[in-house]
Length: 62
Image (cartoon, rainbow, N blue to C red; front, top):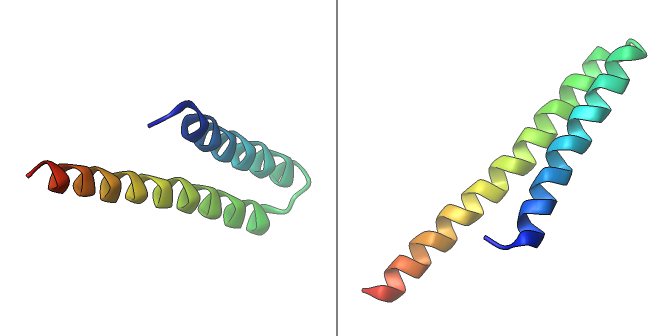
């Protein structure tokens, strides 16, 4: 994992958390829930990518 990936994941997490708080403050709780779910899905997709990349690297060693 390189620094760019870590910064990207941090940006997704912080951005979705801030957007969720702002939308909740304005009474848009349904949209805030969607932002929360999409932010978590983005982080989950990156985690799956890392696992697939790790499996590919381990497969290359064998």
